[in-house]
Image (cartoon, rainbow over all chains, first blue to last red; front, side, top):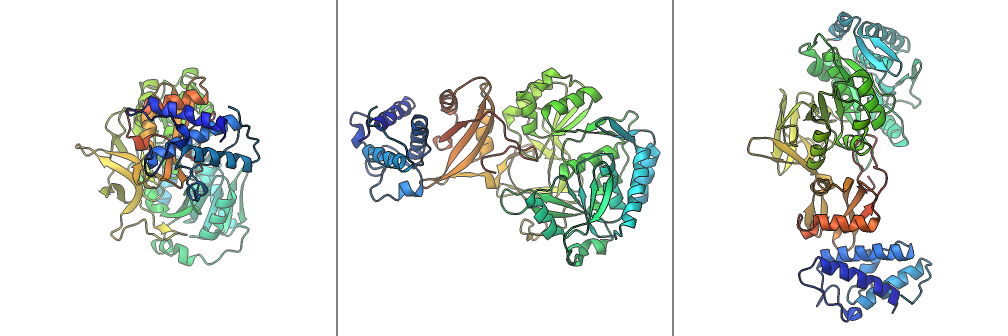
Length: 105
Length: 454
């Protein structure tokens, strides 16, 4: 799993937690479920979270990607079921756009 | 009315009617120019009820041409500039026979497309023996709607009844364009009061403010977005605008917080909302106060009702129909559905909350852009913002806001500020998902706020 992308996501959870009463535990971030059964977000919170991730990815890699597209939603294994799967999805999207994705944070 | 109009202009004689760049013309000269253009129309073979494109923006000869076409009982199709879309809409919907163009010279030429029969389009006008006016109403989707008015009825309503000519004619700025209902309304207001129309060469905040300063303009009809551009550029501090007695704002809803800023910048001017549509004409209103966005429609011949939150109007100056669309926006009992969502307070004042088509649907929850924009304009850090919906595959739409900060702020600071400012002020589903920073305020050709890809 790409640590650099994971660290971007970690930063966003820190921001999200600042405005939440009930903090989301990021102890085991890669296995955290975002949406669905045991998911930490409802659909609106998910969209807001994903938009922030998109912004962070764009800032980091200078490449716009969509995490709320039909493609993201219709993946056989949902990228929203675990953070690690979201990281993989982002990495695949970046590679597809021709962005060299380095492993280190 | 055709004769009394000329008579009235002639009686005003030496009064200045129009000031445009370095040139100006009196009412007497305007009457003469109307006669001259009528002769040209006659020589070009223009017949009553012929559709004629009137090309160009307001100027001395343009205004004369408008009245000449009215006196000729033509169907006037004013177009300031042709884009591919408007040209196609005019050709297909209005089937014009002639183009009257006002540049350095006035010319009348055949329209360069084979005209179809127009009797079926303008039969109602032939029957009423009236002139017509076609306004292209810019829709966000599809071809512009061609809105047909009985021009006789419109003139009768706006300048027919009584002359309101004061001893000292005011200067009125023709800010809105010549092919817009608001522009036509401003012009008719000038003629009714024997005032002087000041036509700007460019409609930039700087140019408009310099004209107010130079001519001591008393009435400025404008739009909320344009007023904000004046404030953002601080043009009200660079020019002496103390002559302004009345600022009217229309064409789009006013965010309450922005009204507060305008009121603070122009403490001596009365602020009045105008309300109207291309279809029903412009109505005079009474604002609850200069700092309130609540208003009453206070015009004889204008009825209103609110059905399921939407404002419906029935007016004396109502349009005859669209030339290129079905009339489904008119109810069976003759009310025009404005598409404006409004609320009414206990005193019977109404307030526009936004356009029905601008509603953002976030997973079934409804967000009105104006509500969020109004709240955000309460932040001293935000100079301008526009809220609209972005499609996504999870909640259907998400809230997107574009922000121009007052000072130097990077996008991270802006995002943080917007989220913190809204936190606790709005329900979570109204919280913008996406926040982008812009340098330039985008403005539509009608001086309205441009939301997203409109």
